[in-house]
Amino acid sequence: MKRSARCIKRSIAVGAAVAAAVALQSASGASAAPAPTPPPGQQIIGGPPAAQGEFPFMVRLSMGCGGSLIRDNVVLTAAHCVDGSGPNTSITVTAGVVDLQDPKAVKVKSAEVLQAPGYNGKGKDWALIRLATPIKDVETLHLAEDDSFDHGKFTITGWGADKEGGAQQRFLRKAKVPFVNTTACQLAYGSELTPGEEICAGFVAEGGVDTCQGDSGGPMFRRDEDGDWVQVGITSWGEGCARPGKPGVYTKVSAFSAQIEKAAGKMAR
Ligand code: 4AZ
Image (cartoon, rainbow, N blue to C red):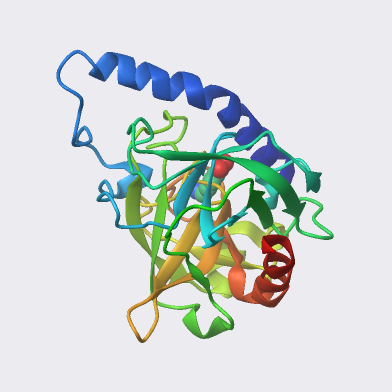
């Protein structure tokens, strides 16, 4: 099966299962006092929980994807997380928390969606969501304007599965993954990879750390020379999760940042 179809199916299935999975987790963990700290474990896959406020630009989308705030009223996510372009009030965006059940969570509805022009399931996996109301005083994430940040170690974050086929998470997880060059990534994926539009990351030899189902649309980012976060990728796809020889594939933000900024600027006003 084409990987695009596989990923789209997955994200929809995850969307349907999210509320239930998160509700279940809270129910099973709710017997004691409200849990201020996450349960122990190694999730996104292979990383610890994020601290409250550590990634203020990180949001959860109600269809079961991640996203990043690039304006106070615009979220960047994956094209395969949305249905198309146009007015759309069906998405709930949860911001400002690592715990999706935190009563302080800021929840806002979408107003409009822009799916990447020309998106057909291969490459171009980006989309913008305009919010009905801006998130107050939020620290937005800056986009890589060129490929000068496409190397080194990247941070990945999400509420997605903690293992292949695993449950969606109540608490935001983070992990670090190294850049994988195009030659090595093509060795893994052949013509399924769209070089120039996608960037790969992961521990190819050993696996073990990765994004997984439900992390899609979330940002992959690193620090620039000033120590500020810069987004280099959008979680897109991969064969399974955290498998040796199968790195994660991310939309190469620098290839689209001019187009994204222009579209976001139009949308935001
Ligand atoms: C997904 O379905 C997904 N291991 C995201 C990332 C990866 C695989 C699947 C990469 O959302």
